[in-house]
Image (cartoon, rainbow, N blue to C red; front, side):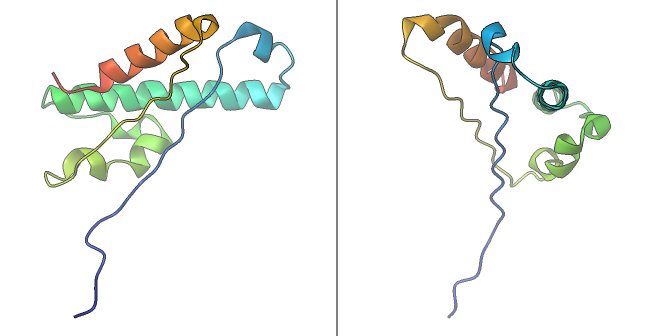
Length: 108
């Protein structure tokens, strides 16, 4: 028997920087991209929350959530959210913020 793929693996990188000193040198296009990422992240969080509450998720809120719709409607689908945080004390605020975002996506 040949091995056949039995599923889909979707990797989404929503990493960005919210540090003011890193954004002061960004171009207008980079600021727009950052805003788009934040919009997509908020829409994704709304979908996770709706899924956890067994309510209709707002898939049309962003292109990202449209692409990931199957993650919320397929009962056999499993989703893992990975957050990268820094152990450095100077990054504590950003690490805590990242963990808070991930916690909002977790099922109750």
